[in-house]
Length: 346
Image (cartoon, rainbow, N blue to C red; front, side, top):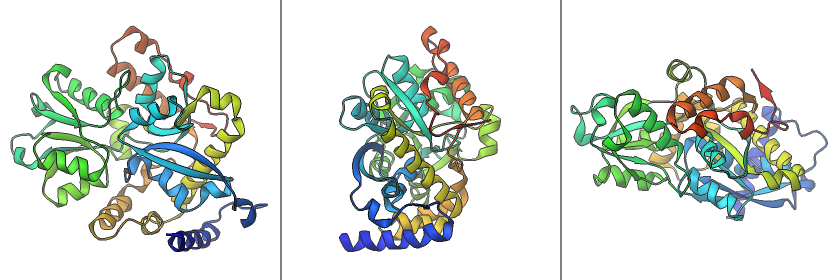
């Protein structure tokens, strides 16, 4: 394991120089004893949150004097719960799901964006091919979504509810069940028939289609489609922390944001193949599916790592349309974002 880690760090170092990382004033020795920081992450392997895993693999965290301790969980709500319980100080998850936590009185803030689009794939079990041709045909079926905890639904459920509502299907006309965050759990849910459809993740969706367990009903990775359907690019994957961490350890929050910025810059400067090599999946179908997806979808990531007003506006409109309560309708996402480190863009 140590030998593999040294190999990855050496390779990442070569790519850092080739990619033009700003390492001025930093020496290898400074990263020798980084501070360990726990972060709860949905996964592993979810395309939305690959930058968090990649940060550790290319040692972007070490450059900032951190060592990320990745704690994989079954969905964004579980990640937020771990952060709020004090098991960790940071979490990754969906922006809209974090907004629900804030609306419910939790002391949370979004500190860094990861993606520019929803980055979900709506899959239907192969047995329904020819029967389910559009979203409106999902009425009466069982739909798999990601984790749920008291006081919060996952962004996948919010997003699915929104799509169904647009198709004239009320929340009571389908049954939602948890489908997990890993390829194995999502595959098992579809293959066993415990769900009929699934708001799934890449690269898992590509693997399941190739294995003929499901087919794609709708894809929400394309930038132009997102602008057309949601009125703008849409903030989904992001990094969050608690209010008290910002107050007590602003320098730690800054290091976390800089780690994210370095990683997103690395993604923008490197190829899909280099990403796969750095992430180091087991190989075979797993690696091939990841490469196939990243070749087409690497632009889902926020290359400048700033908060986009276009994305925040689309996210706020989505939240108001998805949540019918007076409290949610009055909510403004500006109160959920602390952009002092990441910065903002139009």
